[in-house]
Image 1: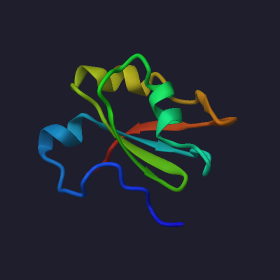
Image 2 (image 1 turned 120 degrees about the vertical axis):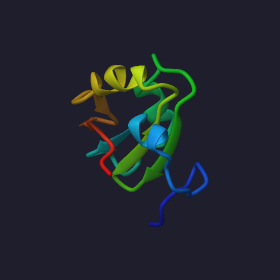
Image 3 (image 1 turned 180 degrees about the vertical axis):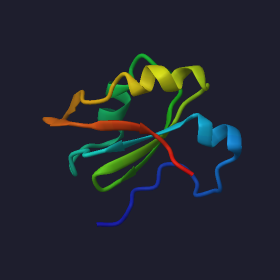
Amino acid sequence: WGARHLIPTQVATGDERERTVVLRSLAYEADEADVRKLFRHIPDVVIKLERGSATVVLPSKNDVTRALACDLEEVKGRKVRVRRAED
């Protein structure tokens, strides 16, 4: 199982890092559509999926709080953890 890269691999800028959250405990069979459904209230997210996790870049810093509110919501029958991306 390799990572499914949906965005080009690049070094995140400071602003991008501040607009990024990480999903953990994601079901292995979850796909981009499942993650978009979780963040349906936030348009234009950029998603990078890996087995069991996802990195999501949000359009603005204000959207981070809205994304963090999705912590412990279910995706594919599993409660996912939503956290700020760490340096």
